[in-house]
Length: 126
Image (tube, rainbow, N blue to C red; front, side, top):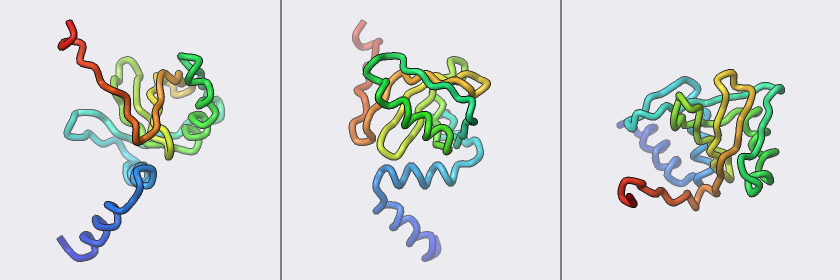
């Protein structure tokens, strides 16, 4: 590793979570397949985008999600067939369902970057 790379890595470690997300969104402008098999890419929607909330508690976040999607954001595709993905904003992560035409997004859930939702393994429960 050269000294320039070492400096960049050191500086990246000092970034806040929102700054790291912004950096990733700028770096990943093409589709990438991660080690987990999930697809990461940057996306941007046009003016015709419609955004709705799946639950009333998500309604306060609609305007921010719409603005984020129109400016451009980092997306991690959860399930390509169902159109579900996580969208990474500066102060919130949004779990959405998006139509293949990229003109409609339904906000299913959201959370602050430092408080991810608790994952439940249904196989362990049943």
